[in-house]
Length: 112
Image: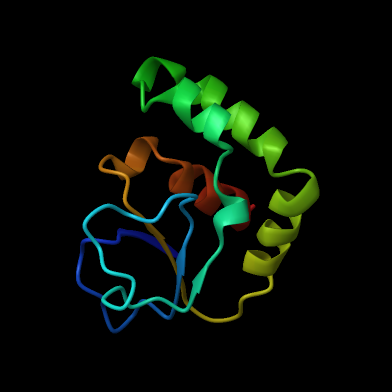
């Protein structure tokens, strides 16, 4: 499983490409992004995303809160859908810093 920015060109090894952001990426036309699915519900809530604001000092707490969000409701269903994917999977996000992104938390959770 890999994580890539939506602004990077697709790679032949990407497999199933799933956008995991709640908001459509800026500057990307919907017909120009090569993806198989957009799972908005697996993204952090707007409230959590705004609280976090990609502040590195808040990443650990963000991770904990995000994992909690993924444990119920529509988010849990979307997570189950990702878990059911067989073969290569690439999580797509517009986030600049992948190491401090929700996509990294999601990848680690799926790998458990």
